[in-house]
Image 1 (spheres, one colour):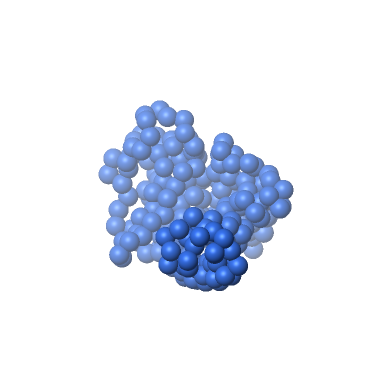
Image 2 (cartoon, helix red, strand yellow; image 1 turned 60 degrees about the vertical axis):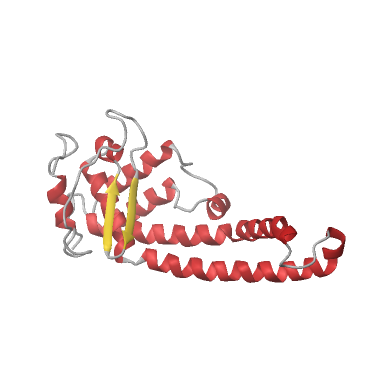
Length: 228
């Protein structure tokens, strides 16, 4: 394993310590350079993926290079939460249902529009190739209407993973640090309506409030000490 001098030689031990009560022991921890050496990209990049019995959590090198150990642990705990809470499978079910609903709405819309305007538009029926632009426009409209719904589902899963990560890592200040770093490319405090419609992740302000609420309810002044 080739972790650099910085970030944090203690990171593997800290990460391994988080696993027993969350998702089992990992096969290993590997370091890969993603960005340019000495780059200054977004510090909070991370990725969770699974395929055919394999699971991988990737922490971006910018996160490792620019963040404190507490912040790295908090992000790792968050990504573990997606796995333990089965978010991938839940999202697959939701998207499957959504596709069925959109296709049903598409067929209903096509039938009604073609019955009324088909002759004027020169479209003989749903099987006519000329219907393709109309079908694309209808699918786009349905997807636009569904955007707040899909964003809310993803945002809810992200909040669940946030809370899981706070419980696993017990690093609310580190979690708040990661949320601040995200402000480099995300609006920190959108309006409630803006967040509901356009945000598929909780805003930075929401995440910081969540972390501080968790800290007030679970920690004393001592680092990591549970409230009796």
